[in-house]
Image (cartoon, rainbow, N blue to C red):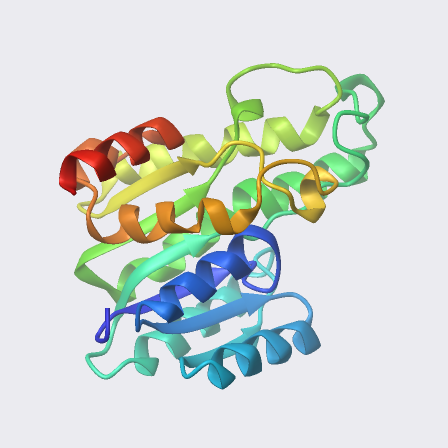
Length: 235
């Protein structure tokens, strides 16, 4: 992946940070975006100290102008120009997982989760489109709560369902490969630290960006089973 440029929103924590590191380990140029400027600087320094080529910008996915700057920066970061992969991993959860029932959600919590988790995905993809290379791919982490109603997940589940709909829309309306990746419950701040280690699913993102059949994943939700089965078939 030496000539590959990867953009990761939400790249300072959870799945985003882990995905950024594994792409960097594969030799990609990695460009990070996240709300906390200090955290972005720390994450970039960590990648650079491991020998990676990395840069980052403070980026709030609720602000399309922030995202526009991030994508423009990323398009100039690699030697070959353009963006090869976008991992739209920025997300928020207001409250404790499983303890935010829909009927008790505040308007403010609903609006911010929707603006970050659903509209933020829309913004990331839309602003990336002018810079994507011909084989460019966009990968969006998701979870079962987007499709299977579970009590206590309120606006977060609604926003993730919205993000999946955004992915399907771009998959249908563009020639790029746009897919959702469902790694199951992963131990991050959004899940209260419950779930599998992010390191155990990081390879799923590299596989989806490089080896997965684009026709199979475009507009789809790809889970752990599909990744593991295809990885076995390709080995």
